[in-house]
Image (tube, rainbow, N blue to C red; front, side):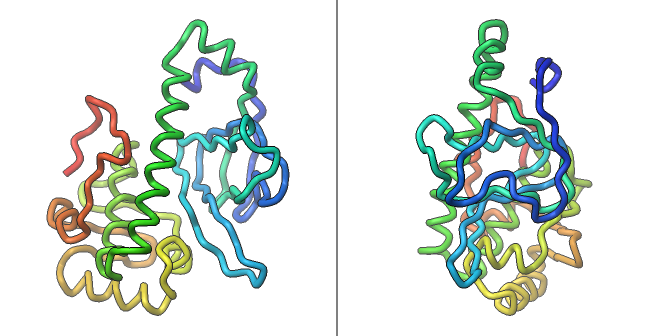
Length: 222
């Protein structure tokens, strides 16, 4: 898809740089070429809820067609390179490559489904299930873009970021990760995530990857 784009607005971002601000105007759809990003919202006192995250190749569609004001922010979690694609460019490319429009539609559908899964995590899963599910999803998504090494991968999220994504305190995340390590389900040392048996972790997390809209022919997960 990216090779098909002849006119792009490329930007380099530093950690915590906002692409769009909650309460501000939306921007054109944006693709993360490198680095990680997050979708989040905040309370007036600064408490933050991470609603989703972006890996290299992910599309951040800011719903410019349906809302004049953003109800959340999108920011870089690490140093990142992104490209903005105008709606006019997408429309032009769609005439010769309909897969581009399909990719954007699938990305949007997966983003909405992932948000539904986040609500289920916060409302129903236990602390152990919630933490395991989040890290299981993260590993699966990393594996799909070939950023895992057998049973491990490097993640950009800190324990604070993970806590903000799953509605727990950092102390509770640390204690839960320790419980998961003791059970032999995973290890998180610094920013290295190791999952010795993905199928076992999926069962413990009640994880079903269907909401990620995995394409037929994707790398086998598990």
